[in-house]
Amino acid sequence: MSKSALVLRHLAFEDLGSFGAVLEEEGYRLIPVEAGIDPLPDPLGADLVMVLGGPVGVNDGKAYPCMDAERDWLIPRLAARRPTLGICLGAQLMASALGARVAKMPRKEIGFAPLALTGAGREGPLSALEGVPVLHWHGEAFETPAGADNLAGTAACAAQAFAMGPALLGLQFHPEAGELPAFERWLIGHSVELAQAGIDPAGLRRDALAHGPSLKRAGRSMLKAWLQELPA
Picture 1 (cartoon, rainbow, N blue to C red):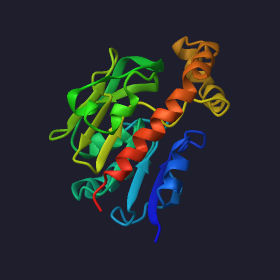
Picture 2: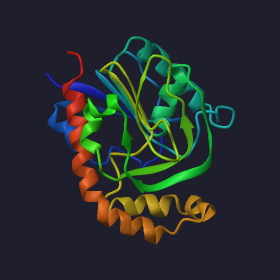
Picture 3: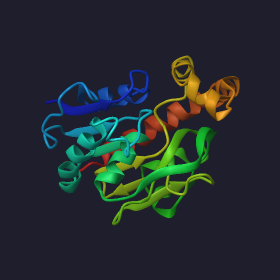
Picture 4: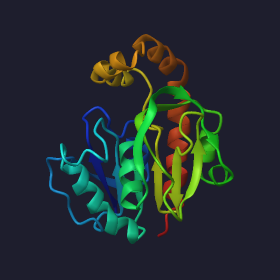
């Protein structure tokens, strides 16, 4: 019998990326949900929920009501410790639902850079990412929720990942993306943001060529290890 994985997506090209094949290998049936368009189902129904990234913010509920709706939808799921993984905006929504602060950073963190894993990070699935430049693309950041373990940081962002038990994992960075040619969609789709931030897409493209394949391998290993440790 297959397991169900609800995938909440905010932007078409910020999809599961390299994670899709891992979910298929692990026997998950994908249930796609488009943020702000599709109704949110029973928060406890799916075996796994994955909340992906996007350009809007947790605190933008007045302009984008789906932000408040998604945060409130996550609260009972997280309280029940049902398997949930958030990436970038998804992790920020999880953190907010757990009562943690999410706020703008002094400067956006966009580009490839390795993580500094904490002791807790090195003991868990994120150990697969040690020494591997991962993709960062965010202008806001979360504080580690009360009762959660901080797993990693960077010079620009002290809280890059958190876990609350084996079933809840929030990742500020993108372990699922960054390999060409798919990464070109990010560069085109976020062209205005890159121009405003003064970031040359050619440099990101070169870094994706250099680091994308290793990030794909490490990211898939990380996800596989996390899925296999989930409570039955």
